[in-house]
Image (cartoon, rainbow, N blue to C red; front, side):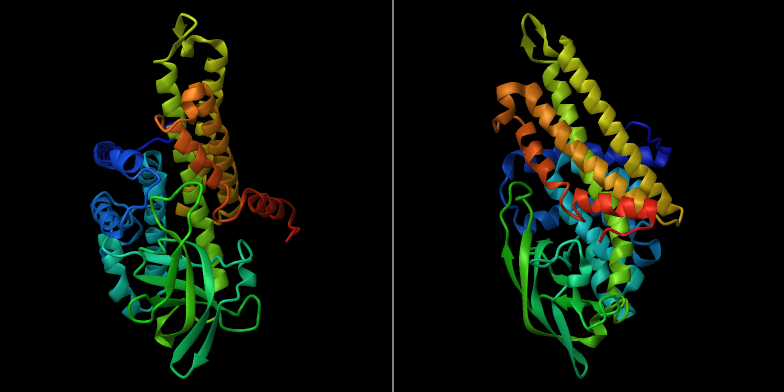
Length: 385
């Protein structure tokens, strides 16, 4: 695992999860449900199994029924998920951060009602931030919640929403005031009680799980479902991004690591010109470069997690990790395909799928270019946006 040293407890947790993933998850996502939508009941069954290993449950305190793991340990487990299935990593990520947001910011009645289901793996949450024409700039959110007595009336559209079709509830970022910074609020919308329409989006990859558009039309939600206080959503979302970007970096890391593993396996089995292709100098050089990039991505990713565990700001470090690891995934997956030659573009080999998944990685939680702007602002104090 590169430079990252594990405690005995961390090592045991990672090894147990890895054994389970190899036996039960890898065949599901890379064979049976490869590029095919996994029904909610099947995904829920997997989430319940993963809760036993500390996925989603790990980010919640023991007092609230979770395992209370630190971010680095959680990231170690998450890396194993991604290296096995990038598709599975998405609901794990979204449910984890939904649970974190509920525990840290939601009023007690919402915690009691919605947190146990996420911890146990029984329910799914969606985080409604992105909108058509509104991506990284949260200040431009247009979905509006209008106060009507003791209720919010919500109208708007969200897009690129993970867990959309699976979701039991939506934590929706809404405009509740005209102040660009103090006019955004998080509101919990229960799908069964309050209702919203979901339409799935089909993509180049990550199609075994749900990514969707969500439509809200005159949806009435009690004001008591406000999370984090009225007008506090921008501040809370930016704090959430700092952590979630580290996990998207881990997505890039996991895909890159699996691509490297597949390339090494192929290079040590495939013979060309009378010897294993691993014995050809140019192949050896490609593998060396790929391995170095994987370790560099891991270093940046776990450094950011360590800073967060220390209670320190990690905006620049999280941006660096997300930028480097996701771009490294693209390069490494591309090289893995090249090492496979013609076989690399067939569905018989996993690198074809990994290359498509890697292309997606630099986009969520702010594109590579957005991360560069964040890093530049941190270095100079001058904002380019």
